[in-house]
Length: 499
Figure (cartoon, rainbow, N blue to C red):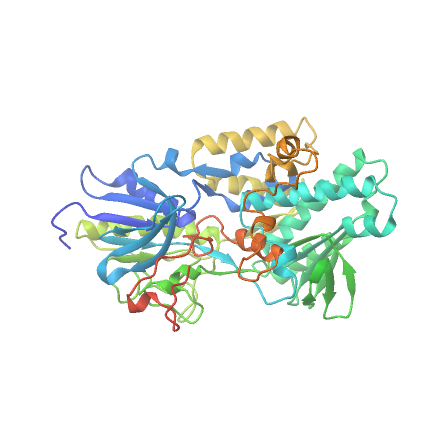
């Protein structure tokens, strides 16, 4: 297709698909052949398989993210959110992180905003729960676990100690299993520095609604994982649902009730809500309908891949779509970039086809499970395979070297057991010192105390809403409202843009 001038390629989202696609285009585009713009709220891409290790203190948090401006120095990076897309007019509506909203015109669209946490209307979830899709969430959970251990070790109140040392994870997929296994391993190791505590004082609970954990691996390996975690004292509540989390009081459909101060939600993902504010075709799960060539079905000059796309899985037959995993996303990005280049050069494009290789998971230091190409490993060999595989996949030599350095140092030194929870509000001490005696306390900017009229929502709801934005999101979960538009496809049935 002739554009009359170098076409402008817009990449919506800077996650796996967005960053890898832009990086490959940057490397392979000829001089003056096209320009590339990436719109992403964060200034970095997060390598999510390393979040459990970052939470456990095995990896430096900065080493599990890739700065977009450094890696994509041949592209324009816009720090902001896409609040809507009108592809018929080739325009995206941008809400920068700061400044006035504006329109961005393009010629070719790559829609890959990723996914957000899939939640349920459980009382107390928004107020008490925290996700596990970003570095901020992973480090917050680590800080909270250590803070609760500090609180329990410093208290003689048995009820306070039980509540502080109860940690609940909801969702037994890879994210949930790796998170609870790594954090329990870290906390168990930390008990050596708390004479007042022992591992038996802590209660770790995994709640899974289905009949098994790790559905991505074989049933035998899933059962092995279940038994290993139970052997470590983790309560694995299978075929169990959460009814309420109000005020930190956990109520299960089995009738069991208990209190917990740390509740982590890892029960799956859903396509980004931004897609409802576009004129792109969606399936019944809110994902963009795609062809095997990673083109948006029936739409010219629009491409998609990753968690937000319903990409046909050619290895499984008609009707099957690829799973929302990093394994597919990285490979789809390569095919996507190559197809865009081929289409620009009037060359044939290729379909995406990849047979799922299997999965690897870490269950703590020197512990793991792997089911790759029919080869089943457990324990230390699986843990080594997990690290080797992900080290090969993390982007850029810079990040590989830093991750390897972290792992090497951990062979000779213990993990750091320190909570830096004050990072969430670093000015708290200074505000207290600067407040005159007898004057009302000054609340933190943006805190619940400064937002009494937030549409009637409780304070915890405002905090939870702020946590839903994750790496690769295009901004529908941000608090900035989308500008009102008149384009019909970009509206909800009620006529209100989804922000």
